[in-house]
Image (cartoon, rainbow, N blue to C red):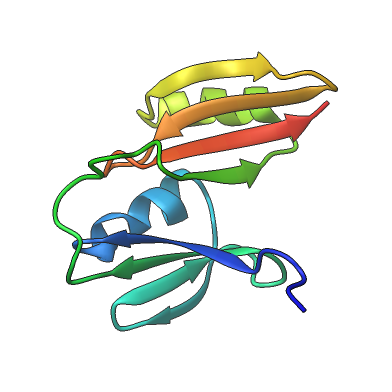
Length: 119
């Protein structure tokens, strides 16, 4: 029986160009690393894989096809910190009802990333 989401992956022409953004800028720890693939996150829940794939060339051509969502316990503080690090947001923190606040930005290859906080 399928129980739920275990991980998501973002494939790149060269994942080592994405890793500093996810590890250093976003602050996600590396829980596993091998040749051509790295997993970021705490390793105890849903994880995000970054990998090099021979069929991926350049930046994302359809970045809205999938979005990666990251949880935050201080969305306003995270948005401020990420802006100071040069991250450009395509949506400022917005209320989506029931206290859910979401902000949206792109990674260096154009993939759409969202952070959310239940307030």
